[in-house]
Image 1 (cartoon, rainbow, N blue to C red):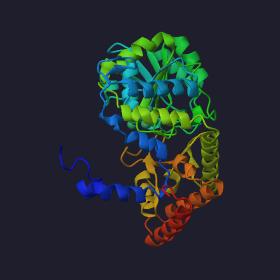
Image 2 (image 1 turned 180 degrees about the vertical axis):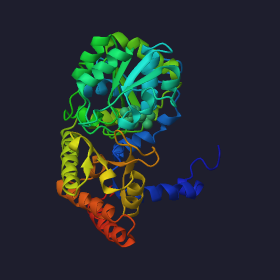
Image 3 (image 1 turned 120 degrees about the vertical axis):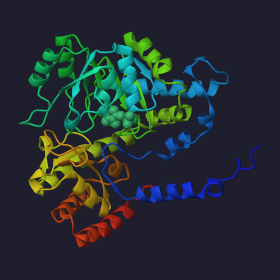
Image 4 (image 1 turned 30 degrees about the vertical axis):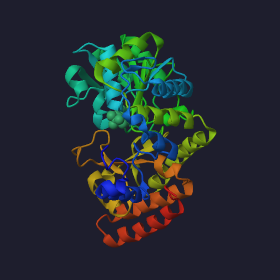
Length: 415
Ligand SMILES: *Cc1c(COP(=O)(O)O)cnc(C)c1O
């Protein structure tokens, strides 16, 4: 055997080990990226397990490889638990990512050239919802609806009118940067009005849905996709839920349709993540995520920030910085220098380019799971305001960075 087989990472590859260590320390800072969260020790153990060695093309008890008895067990567990968490008829836990999950749904439900009606990317949609630079917009025809210019929220009549005009085969609801409750029931009515299928992409809000702090699309959508690494706080990956009538097509679309062998170590970690999402502790964390988001929104609002839609119902806030004469890019950079990580984001009807933008997206999952509450959100919100009131001042940044450091040391991530 290769002599290095039993050597530690430190011995084999100190440069990679060092980067991992530096990343661990970076993650001790304030992370307000709304699409990220923190995985538990148990999830990380499953992720790094020997299940990564196993090929298991196919589905449990119907594999193309021998030796699948243990991976069958974890995939069965993952499916059974996901069904229980969400109350879904059928679950496929094999998609490698949210984008892959969406592509598999389109492959199951559509023919090339069919129309996808989804939210405009710059209003909070996702590339995989039919956008032209993504495969979903090359094979199918992407058409888009928007949030209302006056209210910043989805208006039923506007989406219905757009759906009647486009006559799509599938409508997508569920977003990357929408701070309000997604009206799944209304989307069902619109889909029925125009004879379209309905896909709810709950990548961002799945943890809130699992905890019952955001309404579930299960009664309304034909297909539901979600990542497992955002508010579900599991490993990087995704899954598809659907009605029983679509089960065979969805499974065939994932494998052999657009993936090969499943990542069994990740599926093991998904099983762990679903178990964690059934606990009352996790439910409390998700409730706190929303409370924290509301607390942060009110501090930002009190400091003159213009919040898209006026506030938040979920784990994220979108602030339009135009009234402050700032771009998202500058805000992201100066906050980064002060130890606060978040991302620039387009706001609806943005005049800036996607690499510049007029807004920032602020999310509370990562700070909440490490134990921070509303008073910490008020503090962080006031620091954001302080830095952005003088974004080029090194003095302000250094002062805030020191305060950030002392707050974070009271809420260690990796003890
Ligand atoms: C994050 C996200 C995805 C894609 O997930 P990846 O795992 O990055 O491919 C899909 N849809 C929505 C709405 C998302 O926010």
